[in-house]
Length: 470
Image 1 (tube, rainbow, N blue to C red):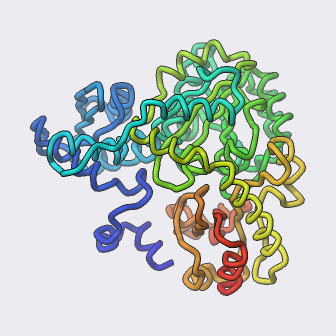
Image 2: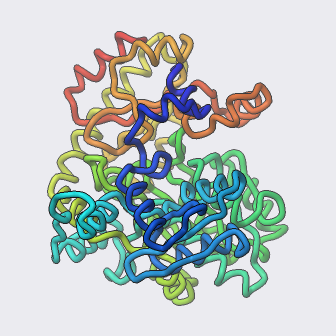
């Protein structure tokens, strides 16, 4: 836990040790190397250079940072955003790329470096059939009418950003500019709303995703002003499922675009497309179950009243993934179902273990009595739980975390078990103050929660490791 805090507080020594981590938070060394090449090639010394997805992403980033602070060089393969080397602009640039996930992938950077002769090796293998294979798999798993209704995206966050921008552009022409965040959700999702919809004037936060009476009251009063609502289904990290039927009925009644993100349990385990206008998901989880690819997807519900309007706008804003990344995900397709089956079975047994353990105060998972009835509405088959469990501990979090012999990591949906002091890693700015911690407790979020992503190891080994630490 000491190292978690050092990382969150920007300890320079730790930064020198931690060379590779989740790419939106710690930039891969191949990407940094390629950006340095571009800086020299285009004589951008004195500027901070970021290599991003092609044209649209670069233009959006420039508009966000301000034209006076940035310049853009567009290429068919990438965009270069050169930023003024001042602390505030660089901070905003890094946050923009964290929230949107638009920086190029490490495989793409590596291939550029090989082509330029900077490093030795062969380019990452591009399978010409991989795109069609993956799109066909997503079409089947998401349940869209046609493969043209699924758009693969560079990352999960770029998928969410594309959905937000498309809906915002369509709905604002109708005088609809408000956005609703239903419940506490993943940090970069709500930061997209904060940064691009405005923290006060264009965003409404509903604290409890289960209490749709609050939503109904808001829509009765201001429904004709609301552009869209974003809901995780289930939520991260409390794994709660709002009533999908009532949520859809309310948003349809008032003409609000409903965006649903099923990443916590994944498109492998739940069917949420019938309950939304736009589905967004990270393929970094579950689909890329080996945890070595960043990718996402946006899908459109063909029965949505907004379908025809949204489709060209989604196509405009979505940034497609790199061919080398698509090929890597395609290599993992054959194992998705078998791995999910093991993960789901392990999750049920581990949740039951926690529920019976005196060292655990509360267990949050899809099978919790307060949650299971709503989750069954979206569950593809009985036992399709997904792999997320969050626990509230009796003992101090550091004592448990330091002792527990389970791999630590901030992602989930992998074939190996991971655990994370989630609120520390996602919301350290909030939990590091007494006021922030009190606010989280008001939301029902203990700052010391441990979020677990269950893997495919022997369930006896997994339980033994947690039992030892508890």
